[in-house]
Image (cartoon, rainbow, N blue to C red; front, side, top):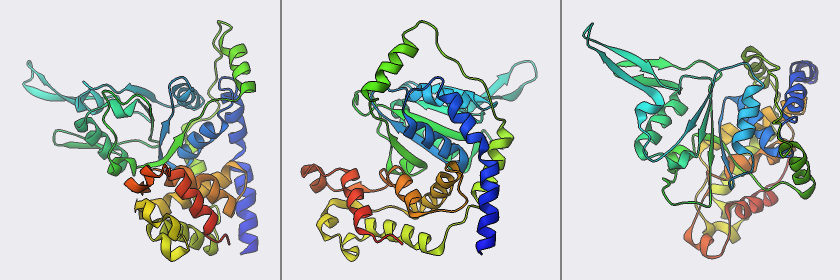
Length: 329
């Protein structure tokens, strides 16, 4: 086993060399926001979808655009609005008067990387169409279904403070996102660097440094990153602690959790931890990998009670107690 782990570790070191090139190129445009950029890369390495939440002006859209530009692949930006229709997303059938037949006009969803900007502004029918695309990775127009080409990732943004004219995402759709990342303000030093870089009148640019095939090859390596059975038990303990807090010594927050995390959370914790280890050029998972990705994977899957809201107990506070209490292997 030790020999196998060493072999995997060496393979990961070789295959993850492109990560540093990507981060350097993205750093030519994006100042700070390392956590957000790392999570976007993590989503690409696992094929999981990601939801970025933050107030306007924090470079959410710019970060997604920049990371997508570093990869030579098809990229589409979709600006979600209340009058958007499913056909605007997936495409529609068009009648040809000369031939008397219907032809398919594919929508912008037929790309490798999708930026769903302000996703919570789209109505329920659009959300439903996007749900099939995200989960099944396929599009149905009329009687025909198309499988989407890999890599396929939905990277969505939403504004948490302006709720007028928005349609909150249902829990079923939120659960389809591998991660929900809270984007915060830059530091004072970072903001000064932003002024120097962005207020000069000349926008910085990036070059594509990797091919889609590189990303797909990296995914096969990520799947081989070693994860010890004790780490898997740790993941299950974390998830079960959100479902039955009292049984895990968390009676003080038992009244604050309405619903715990689903089995999909356990799956994504394994995949996310492996990808995080890959980003660190490491071929095996350690507990710190779980803790690093755990908050972003669990925060939108744990539903707090009204009592938690009344006590001003946030989901982050609840999960913080879970990570503190559950024993680390």
